[in-house]
Image (cartoon, rainbow, N blue to C red; front, top):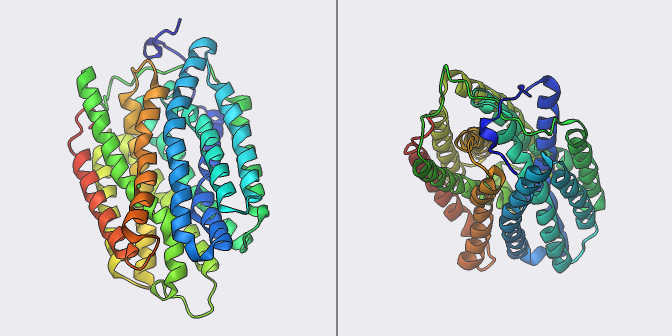
Length: 415
């Protein structure tokens, strides 16, 4: 019988080995899709259907996001059930990793739009089988007073995965199977230590009652706050979906806006931009996570991140050259900070949930629905053309960031 884990007293697990293997596995999970969706996949589609790249990319991303929406919920239920029977989430993580590696290698050899789309669907199903139980480990194993720092480390995996995009752009400047296969190997090496070494026994350390970080909330209040968190995350991820999917195509079509001289390498400039942005995100996110735990506050830095994202998108809408490139960097730093603290906030609210993996699966819709809505809107409003896409997209996603910050301000269960 599955006893409520919130009432268990256990030894803290936040030793150095645990921190390293968990952060490394999170890096591997994010690395599996960030370079793929921001560079490798758009570049592959540009290579095979150059005249219909935006439309084909939208259709493929849409199919993958629909798959991810369902797969994450199902994977959460599977991992909760496995934990109830076996006391850990090891098998779903291991199976998801194996299938993800195979799907990445398969994408390296996909040479038609149909095969690319079908293989991406398989990739998304496999990735989420691994991703869902990895996210639930933060709820299972860490106290509230450490969730901000751990969530910061986990979400640093996203900008670090962005380094993978920069490395792929600089080290593999042309489309081919090699970057996909190299990515598969690095992902496997990143997640395997967690499967081998993690203390998989369910153990949720007790909350530090001396300095509470969350107010007691009724089930109804907790559900209300989860809805607000999910809506705000969905709005922020709308900007991420637009930027991640279309920014590379934007600078390919409009190199002068990025200050590129005729004949200058686009992949080289894009790679260095991603690397610089990643370094900035690493520093700022660690500082934000530490500040959040120390001051027992989540919402204020989240709201600041949302507003900063809106300012960055305004720079992209109106600027060119260094202003545009700075706007790109500021948006991604603001996004990573926001998502790190959002992760900690959700983990706190779910401390007493009987099936946190399943609930996280539903909340993950806030990550996947923008990846459905944004390509669908691009297809519906632009008909596959891109000239009117950029100003409308930058303005709309700036508004989404402002609305996200407003919703965060209405959360009550966590300060």
